[in-house]
Image: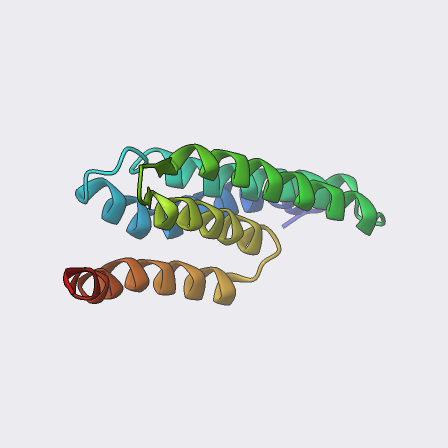
Length: 147
């Protein structure tokens, strides 16, 4: 293959593949939230993962020699997703609901960032543990709240 083909792969195909991977790794959590009839679900989680991945990829591309730029982009993503997560939390008279959804949004953002940095191992673990925590800890939480 010639240099132009490799340049095309580097500039278009690999970033698109990373965004798709971030999307797919967000889907288990998205399905869980959707099946549980939460207001944030099938569309939001993959979009958060993709956007986080995209922002980090832009920072990595633009700031190849500027780690401060990448750090500022990461800080902005973390803050922005925290703001979105805050909107998922509903406070009642005696309790708050939606905190697991908000935390899952933050985690999904971390999945996207991990994929952008090429840390697929970390992204898979974050996706798996988030999904398992939502699935396996819910019955335990419900049994504790019955007492």
